[in-house]
Image 1 (spheres, rainbow, N blue to C red):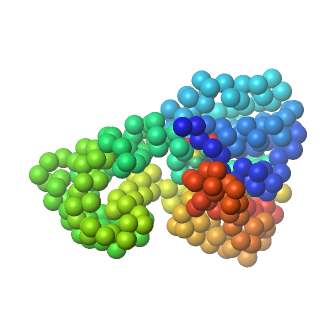
Image 2 (cartoon, rainbow, N blue to C red; image 1 turned 30 degrees about the vertical axis):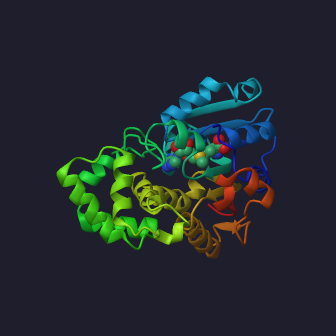
Length: 299
Ligand SMILES: C[S@@+](CC[C@H](N)C(=O)[O-])C[C@H]1O[C@@H](n2cnc3c(N)ncnc32)[C@H](O)[C@@H]1O
């Protein structure tokens, strides 16, 4: 299923792309947001799109989705980590952006077609990394201490049965290497009570979220780029960040507040912008989305 861009209209409204501007999409994926940005920076605009997942970069290029804008604009798309944006801009001899968008996490396409185990609903190799060359979760589980694993499941998943789950994973791994999402799902399910969370969420949801966040250093990457936002976005430029869970949103909120106190940015969204009822029902994936935006006021 093609990924439906989340909070698209709202992100464009806060970013205010205009003809001739240079915009950066730090998580370009299938190019949903990027295409809307290109429509508005055209003509003579410039777009830099990066993504950690080279297969998404390849499929975006193959799709030709952004091709029609390439005559009137400069478009550069390649594989990279948004946390290294200041270095990427220097290396490519690019200026700071007039705007930066980060649409965090994974896309529907990665979930459904990557074959890298982003969901326990399919039995796939237990990889779960956006960057295919990063250490896969199956290897992390082999080498990590039980105590650290329990902490990760608790901190990044909010899972109160974290100690039990970590013990079960290590116990099972000693008998036979855990290789697939299906195997991990079974281990977790067998440890948790039958009426886990009264059926509101699946037993594996929190543990899978925690392992994905850890394997991809998701919170670290986010913190690193926010702290250095003025090295990637120019004075008066805008940044918009779409988060999908409270751990991410808390980081954006905390750093935005701190930077606003230091007169580095002006916060444009006192409260996070949430999807409308209409968007939530049209695209259930958008339900947890929260958009925060800021303007750089010193650098
Ligand atoms: C929700 S999708 C973006 C969807 C896109 N805005 C669209 O509408 O088509 C998030 C993307 O961010 C990528 N990603 C995750 N962490 C990243 C990082 N640190 N640097 C660059 N890309 C990252 C993922 O590989 C994924 O393709």
